[in-house]
Length: 568
Image 1 (cartoon, rainbow, N blue to C red):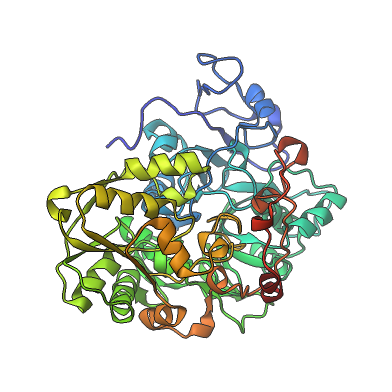
Image 2: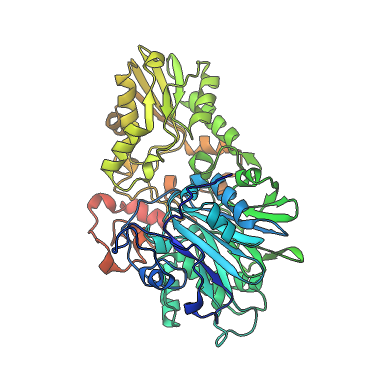
């Protein structure tokens, strides 16, 4: 069955690697006649391996600057180790199930035990890969990645998986060759890590913190890859769920906070690693368990081995926003079905903010479980008052205000026959900039709604996330700029507004509040955060400053005094 367009898409050339000594001139361009319409030579010119190397298209070099693309959601990682399985094809469907976690770029690296191949490009999974490319990604071990940018701009060379090679002349024993890494999360000490690597002769190919992790692992001492990973983890501060591929192993690792999810499953004669359990279901794998904070799992011909990194795991800080927005509702995290937690959030909202109304609607699609919960608790009928265009992506991740406004109008279509003359409760998952809610309220009124009461199943978002969710800067967060809920209500144009409290969110999820990261709501970051406000967008801090439009932040983009104190 075809899984994508049959013409090979532009992207990082599909290459074979048999170790660091394999000469670059012998790299094999398996995806021949790969064309890039953005290339200065114009469409119709096939990109050779040598040209691609210079243009930043190929895996072993190139730092060509690409036009900045819109950031996306929250990265998804996937990996499989099996026997006589089409690892790339299974990884494709695993990434497809995780598409909600990143719509910016996608990539897959594979190994057949001897040669390693990879392909990655900008776009959705179905746009990046097709049957021809998947057939050429031969091997029974693979790792894959869906990206949205949290560190490093949205450019082709920053697509993942990223890799690093062991230098035999400097390695102190242990395995040699190449390691690929797919990373979900964000490091807060990437500046200092990069400085140390640069002083050691490291030459970056990307502007991502993920490449720094790969370089550190490749340079670390250790008799095995697993030992190298455990030695590096104490140096990494922040959030990281990693799926790593070597010539003959699949490795998973999770940061000591457990900030981003990562689980392991079993499928016939294969083991699978994935960001969420929904991806296991899609590829026919059975959920086994979640990877523990601070744990390293190594999968090879001998089976599955587990190691504990020498890191402090006493404080857990699972991202609460996973339950509110990021994760798919059919995923299970910490033994909690995400759908049920969102349903409970809606019920709690109805208890905290009752209102006389005729019906309840939800903003598709993340808030629908909460809307059903609100309706059930309030004893009101639930109706579908907004239809969504599934091909328009989530609006809070678009690059500028004008595009966000256009996307909000394109994304939803109200049903006047349902709404006319009605007092409507509309449930949404969160308010970031307020753009979507202002548009939605206006749509509902134009469709005939007599009253619009907005209910949000998240506390006010007042602080940026530095651990892997690129939602907004301080100046863009409406709840940071307008601290009074009444001011926000007036801005979005609703008749009333109610936010779920942080305590209400804890009760709905049903887990120990001490085990969550709530920094975007409270400003209480689980790790020391170096707040870099010399740029309006701190995710670009590893970019070449000469390649960026660097703006001085406005007063609104700077945190308040109490925010700085809380972050410390």
